[in-house]
Each structure stands twice: as C-alpha cells, then as structure tokens.
Image 1 (cartoon, rainbow, N blue to C red):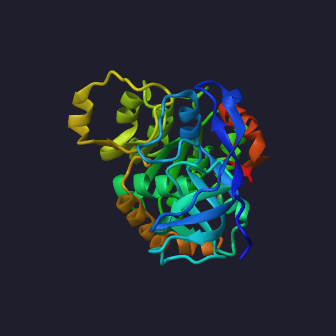
Image 2 (cartoon, helix red, strand yellow):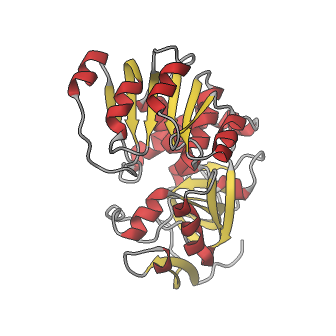
Length: 332
C-alpha cells in the first residue's frame, strides 16, 4: 500500500458567487471514521447541486464536508475499523454528502459500490449521485412500471440521460423535453420514443398527441415554476409527478381541482440531506436491480466532457451554459 500524503489539493468555495469562486486549496488528507473509507479520487461528477452550493443557495448538511462534490470514483486507500464491505485496493464509486472536489474523499462504506469492468473510472465517477436520484425518484417514489410512459424534463442532462436508459431497460415508454435538435437526437439515440423542443413546441399538446390523449403516468420534473400546472395537464389519471429540482422557480400557482379530478400524486425529494441508512438502502436496491444492467453494458452514463480538478470553474461554466449533453466530470 502506498504511503498516504499529509496534504491534498481540493477545490474550495471562496465565497458565494459565480464559477470564479471555485479555487484550489491545500488541505489535510482526512482519515476515515469507523464506518467510512478513504478514496483516492480519480473522477468526480459535477452536478446541479454543486452549482447551487457554490452560489450560496444549497448549504451542506450538518457534519458534511464544506467542499462541493456528491459522487466520486477511485481506489480505496484506507478503511475504518468497522468497514467490512470494501478493502484497500478496491476500485469503487460512491455517493458522498460533500467533498468530492478533492484528491482524496471520505465515503460511507455502505454507500460505495464496486466499479464494474464495463465502465471506465471516468464513467464511474458520473454514476452514483445520478443513478441514486433516478432510481429513487422514478422507480421508488414515481413507481414507474413496464408499459407506462415517463415524461422527463431536461432529457439531455446527466439525470435525464440516465433516466431514459433505465426507463427503457425496465419496459417503459419515454418522452423528453429538450432545448435543441442535437439534444433531441442524443435522447432518441439513447432510446427516447419522443423528443419535444420546449422552445418551439407546447409539451402538453405534444404529450397528449404522443399518448393518444391519455397523458404520462410518471413525470420527472427538475423545472418547477410554471411547469407544475402544465405537468398536471400532461399527466394521466392517477399520474405521479416527482419534483427533483426547481430551475424554473420554487413557487407555482396551480388549480388544485386538476390534482383532485385526475387523482394525481405530486411528490419530490432531495438526496443529500437523507440519512446514511436511507442512502445505504438505496445503494443496496441499486446493486440488486441496476448493477446487472451496468455490468452487461446495457446502461452507462452518457459523457459530455471532463476537466482537470483545478479547472472546476470551467466545468461549472460548461454546466451553466446548458449546452452539455450528459455528464461532466472532474479528473483528479
């Protein structure tokens, strides 16, 4: 086993603001607690919550690292006294509550998963947070079943491209909303049945046409705002709308009669504040239900771009441009 350094390079947030506030710092390499492992990070996924944290609107939960970064992949280099799932030398990918933008990162042993041979370490760094978000919200909260139709807003995002693949793998039909022809084609290539350009088309009308007037059984929404009532219009009777982000605004005016008449369920969740036990349960479910698809190569992250760790600001600029298709990762 290589001797661990005392210090490491991390990307800190100097103050709330734009991408320029992401700056390299030197910090001590952390030591794992009893149920934790220390990962030498090879790749760290970049996600919208990182952007929100950087801007000051999404503070880390109590006890979590103040560094951004919610998913990493790399090699286990130290383990806590009670860690039993992984050992030093294992290649793992893991959900983390923060701290991913660093050369070394602490993870809960139960939240890490072995990297399958079908994935590069770069792809593995784009998996955990995205996969957990999709699995929990589309399948556990949304209850998507074979034969049903899923509407995904932001179909070309990291979340969206993973949701397309998983929904199709489990026998559902998929409709996405996107903002360009290139994004539409990318989503269709992944298996989406229909792609709607929200800039030029009314997604409610297009959904009704694509479903023969029935609407969608499940809607995965990261927009909020005025999309909420339109989602009620696009949903099928007994439909489930799952809110995972609020890019279009945190408040909405809705006609509750639509929710009542259609017997709709509108739910939502955020992953980061959930308990370690909750996250471990999600990981266990994913290892049983989804990992076989990853090992077989039937599901894998669509990669947009990668940046050196020190160029995290450029990675955030890429994300905020909304030109990306798929996942952005940092390489440590």
